[in-house]
Image (cartoon, rainbow, N blue to C red; front, top):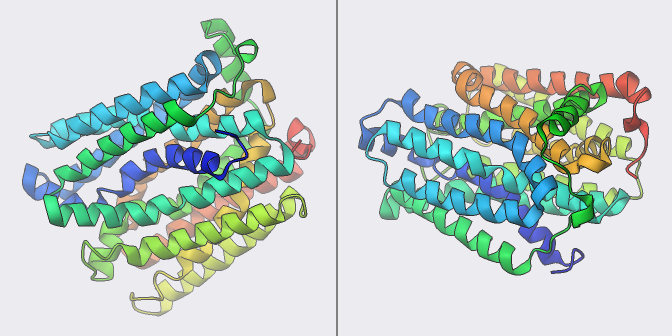
Length: 403
């Protein structure tokens, strides 16, 4: 498959979406899982924490492994492991077994996201890379909208266990497509050693870079402002807005529409706008959304469409800014793109894990507290970007354009 083919972007997007898809698909089934396994809502919520904890740890290694063994081998192995662990979840007799199955899923779920970013930087640079990254994000953005709709439908038709069987089938399908169609983009002469000393120095070099930490932190914090609503969806939609398990589309479809439209605009302006102009425009949209969200939650009763409207505005700005910030971070260390992508994903997923296990259960109590959580994470993300722009960025390689 040629990297210029639209199917190339579609496959990379599907690989990247598998990990997040495993979060969203079973959200409508939380009450059914609790009843079936005799668990509390908090115990079911911890299946998400179990998944994301191992997900966050393992994304540190997917990139380094792909730098050593090549992109295809890592993808094929992790997709197979994901399928097997999904079947463990489907057969779980107790909540403890489901925790274990979800933890195994997390070990493999992030490979597509990490390795896919490295593949993009393997084959393209500059505006071409930004366009492909935006195209991947457009397709990737469909997952949060489609996943809970599929999960809700499977729940009604065949019960909650069918959701995990579906995940296994999806992973095996992606493994077959990867084997058949995805070219190896990392030549043997460009591969890196896994010697502990060499690897340790590489991780230290990346994770001690102030410019990298600020750029990756900006992406993680901005995304987490939206992610709070993803993991809080069962409470936000079913308790605060009084919707049913088949009505998650009220949140996810508009949110994904914002992501798709924002990514589309980001791709269109690539090569015409400077990356920082695109980023600033994205932040302006996210700030407007956060202010609107706070005002509605503080002054008006929760309800449709007002309580949901700020979220797609936020995701539009998020999708405008994320491709350029991500490429700036990846461009800091061109000889270690897989490892850099791993470190960036680790920071993002680590932040998401903290939200899923600790912060979301605190802020989902009311729509106003959720809106406040979104605003706080956005503020921290903006501060990180400004610190890079006027501090670390002026002294490091990140000041260079998207080469």
